[in-house]
Length: 134
Image (cartoon, rainbow, N blue to C red; front, side, top):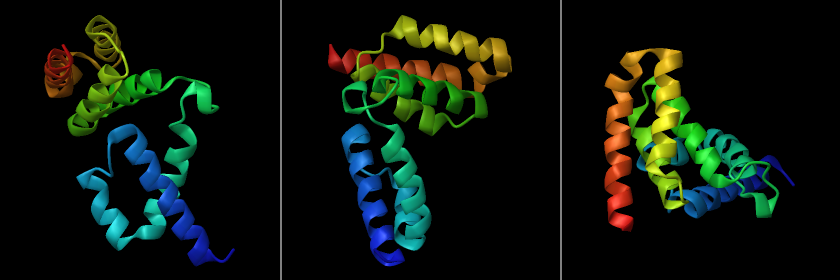
């Protein structure tokens, strides 16, 4: 397999991973896909390897992986990503009290600023997603 074929296969794996867990490639990754497909391929391949549920060979279930991404994004102030991961986690069964506990851990590690910058907005978004689910 040459580099072009390998890149195309990795891009396809990345797209499939996003489609399976997020419903499609997020808008923020579209420019990377269009203009730096080999970079998207590398990220996509890593993501495809990680974002597997336990029945597909993952060590952690997808709900937990989405929660971890939520909390890490909150800690670095990446609110958009945290909201997307929190919504995915809620759709996978994460409860609002579970999310709240994780966000309290973020406050303990990063200070109240992480709540003010991202945490409160992420919690509100998760509440709206949970309400939509019923």
